[in-house]
Image (cartoon, rainbow over all chains, first blue to last red; front, side, top):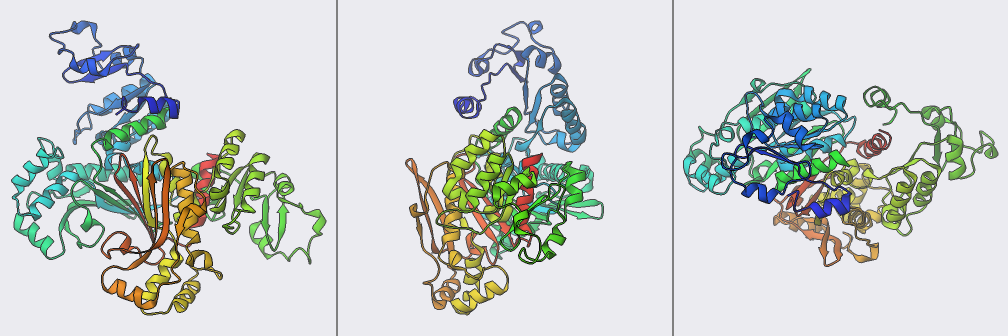
Length: 317
Length: 317
């Protein structure tokens, strides 16, 4: 994505850049301040066969230094319980003096305030637009809504469960639907986080933490997945005009927020009833706009990567 | 609105301010660099009875100077043909060295590029978030979507016609529906601009000009109002599940944009079919997000004023 838009970023946004570090489980920490060729690094033999392990940076801090990083793109997998190792990576980047961009929701739930304050103290940006709705600029939107009061929100934020429920409406079993979602590339091999509502709960917690400025832990969110729903129940729901959806909800109550993720029957002609497949939806209730809703229909494959690219432009322009 | 949120703006956003100038048709140009009390100015007798006319600034430039203005809020009525006097006011403010914020769509259609470039040259902001969808940050949203390619959009952007069509569906005549919209405070005394599609066409042109970066004049937009629709046709449309809506459309074609504003029959269960009363809706087609839709449900009375307040925060923070 970055490479695809390299010319446009340079010419239209005045942002020249080069990739000076890559780190993956397979390749380890690779850095070259003069620039790496992404394609050739990807084709490179794994470290055991190739370069000497001891020539390479040993950890994230050495790697950032060796790469002379100005910006870190953090894209490790979600760890629901701890938010690690993403938090350590982001903290290291900010302390090194680089902007930190993540597609990982964990740090928002487990370390948002710390990382936000660290970024401010360092004069760097901590950005995470890809974490919710594939890069639709939800967090930036609220940055553009100063002095507004967000009372609550509801929506459909997990694609895997949405695809599975659609398939079950067509008569497939839960397992068959899951396999189909995996074949489509929507669900991961281990789809537990999606099916049991963890992904949706983490997104809900991230939105509450950042947009409502109320600290919330995952335990505070009532969470039910879709594992208990039978094909019959799902089919009958659709037939009767009240299909099941995995709905995220949050509402201010006193100084806190009441939040849940659970399957709900929604009216088929309602906005949520019409969200199918990989589409997503969120409805914000604010003092100025009683209902402000955003629908993302069938995002392209690059929507999440685009969110990180947009964060990059925000950080460096 | 500004006064309502004065404390919040100062304490939460670090923006202290005072109103140093007010200009209305009745009061003329009033300025006091030490600050004016809005309420007492509003209660003041008209110029003929009160202060000497020659003590007051004679025109917008004198007034900006006398007020030592840092920010201008421009809220004159729309002039479809020329965009004046708003363009002159905004030009004067930018040349004076003030940020210019407008709720008037005319300048976007008649002088966008000039004012944008003038603002850039002066290091000031020219902001206009209130012009479309009552202050929902549509323009800012695209500022947060760098390097995205907008192919087209469609939506419902005029409340007066939407209210009138809803009333006609209930059996009222066109004239009765218009009176009802006026009684509700939605339609102005002279609702010609709304009914004949001018307001929607100007909004469409503004979105094309700013977001698609294609110069377009009002004559380029195919425009039909709702005056020709009979109550019978409108009732039957709703009854048959295909209600009439005044729909704005724009689509890139080659280097240009094809655009229209016209009554269309839309499926009642579609997103546009569900937009009733003062709600509005826009659907953007982009390369990254094939469908990104925003719905504004029943905005509050202060939604437009809020848009100007948000522009103010954007300009000065």
